[in-house]
Image (tube, rainbow over all chains, first blue to last red; front, side, top):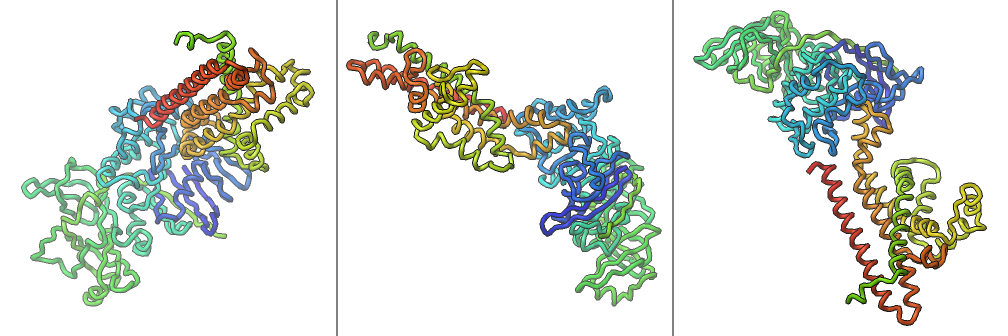
Length: 376
Length: 234
């Protein structure tokens, strides 16, 4: 259980944000300069906020009202920095074991092997950081933070300095961390694809304030937040399971509450839980079940909400059997089709709209999160 | 040739004394040098620019002036000299220890400059990282900062050592020119040049002086190279 409320000023920038997390992976999402890093620096004890409190598992780490400020070294908050910050004069092994020196004694036997294994860094142990690739450095940095036995892990855009290939190399490790390591994670990112894939809960920050907070799927389906989540990549998240494979056409069928989706073949066993992000720009709307159409995915639903027209583009949210789907259309189409809340429609999605950006790996369980926005 | 290379006992004494004085000057100023470098590189306190100026003063003042100030402070009648003599029984005036003090003071700015630059070059975010892993300030310094500034420390020590070997003005002013006690290499060379027929011996000592300096510089190159290679893991 993590509770954070921080108010801090840097020149003309004011951070005034609060959120709570019950575990899992809580993503702090927002543009650069939204205050994300400041917030986690305050959690880790690298920044003493002007006002606020930070409570982890019932222990007060910061409470400005009562003059409490536990120094970073006694917080047991693991920090994975954007640039890794591995110690250049130490080997990978020494880097990994650095925090164990100072961590409370009596960890599980084989803990090191287990984490080395989880992160796939066994072959790197005797190397120096200078001889590691960007992706390897970040995995070692994650291992180093974990081996200090933190009760909370904060990660500051750990993938930002990596190219696409390296990112896809690390994402599964972070997913395993979230699902297996049992350490709650606060994850900073400005990449919606990353957040959609990893986060159980989402805190959207804008100009130093919390704009929205909630389970990832609920936040991603909110069209009023599109200006913040980024229009081009914005999309709803569906929780699906692998239902079947069709080897003759190289397709995989996923089942969601909203209906079935046929996507390019996925190398996953039947029954695997999978999150799929369906980008608003990939969704077409039809008034009747279309025929003679190449698109394979047609989900029935009703129009739940139509966003405010902003130039030629309108965003809308559909309710497909209780799941939210978002679509981006031209204002002209909305008028021509006479779309209005309550109207029954069919969402059409091309199978090839699904690519590795939109699959989110194993679906996490949301323990739920909530927040209050502080006033004054 | 063999006659040229046969050192007189006085010359050998001067060489050994010079090495001893330079070594002690360097070793004694090392911990103070590290502390002052840290203060100047990281500290924020009232009077920092004044402290900075005082540290660098021996670099710009005439060495004779530095030597005279040392004589005033640490001479038998000087306030610090009397204090040291009365409490600890340490006498610096006209002793080799005084020569070491003069050399240490003269080499101090060079030592601090080199160390300070290396401290300022340390990525402090690495120290933050160590703190999040549970290290307190002492361990952060011992395991992160110190290893990272090692090349600067080595360079500072070598510079101070080389400066101490060449120190003349402050030494002769503070502790005079006593063979076997305060007559270091440069002082011995100077003395030999004042005596008729001393040219050859002076030339010999000059060569020795050049050799020692050269060896020190080469050693520092190797040490710094090795230290930075260790740091960057190449």
